[in-house]
Length: 331
Ligand code: NAD
Ligand code: UDP
Image (cartoon, rainbow, N blue to C red; front, side, top):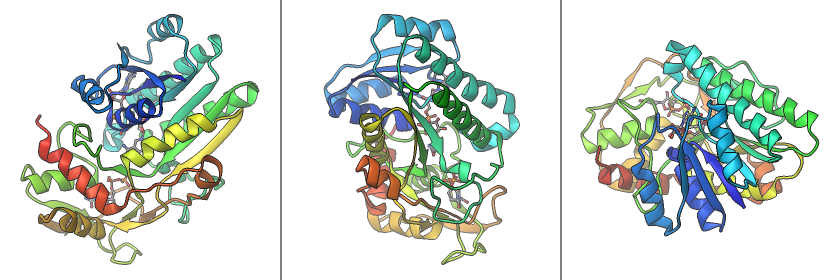
């Protein structure tokens, strides 16, 4: 297939481009580089030895997107492009709603015009809100607590309605749990701008000595050791889940959790990182972070049954690969 990947220079997108190329697909990447670096494309070429067509385009720009559709015959889209920082979305809701919703609307509109009927959308476990774990795709969704989460919940509803009205349209909504780790080559990985918000990049930067100490947000949650529990998934497993979804897609809406199905606490993750890499991660326990839930992990039955996909890489591999990338990474 010829696959258009929006946000393909970003963290999850770049790993998915590698998996797509390795599976024999050809790839067109569209990214405005608002949160990524062009050098990543060279790294992808180094890993795969394959070429990629790249457009530096903002996906909210309808005529620029349409131009891509007129230049190429596209079989399917994977739509990663979006802004993803929860706290920033609270400060800049308009930016988040505009970017994340308009990009999706533009893409679907152009897809309909050019009869492109395979669409894979990056959603998030955040749409489950504070539901009972494990989260199952059929659950009623709880309201999310921030504009970023709302953009995912609203995008899901928009895409589902559009799919209902167009019997030829095939939609996969993939709800990611907590993607971590990096490509085993150490060439591509997660490189957030500024001080990281997420746990794993914070841990790797403490290990590197760039940051002093990890702050563990709360140890009084109703979990095994009191710290938050998350379903960390290796980004390469996640990438492979996209290839499986794209290959499987049939008409209608298909929603899948992409997680491992296993919960790991913050303290367990720190410990796994120390064991995997033989390096200490100094930390202190501080207050809970507002908006966090105690536990979040997936029921992965549906993806396994329908896509034949399961996450294969364990927490030690996630920690090892995350650290290999951080060690090599130069700003
Ligand atoms: P990322 O920021 O690394 O990648 C997103 C890419 O999209 C970046 O390269 C950015 O430059 C690009 N982009 C943003 N807005 C754009 C626009 N209007 N036009 C063109 N390009 C644009 O983020 P990621 O972690 O790879 O996330 C990819 C997708 O998965 C996002 O939609 C995100 O919300 C979703 N998601 C991420 C996580 C996570 O923890 N990383 C969890 C759940 C869902
Ligand atoms: N966390 C932490 N310290 C940090 C960052 C995160 O203790 O510096 C905790 C956070 O409270 C949550 C877990 O790690 O329990 C995962 O947080 P992250 O921001 O990585 O992902 P989220 O699940 O919130 O999307």
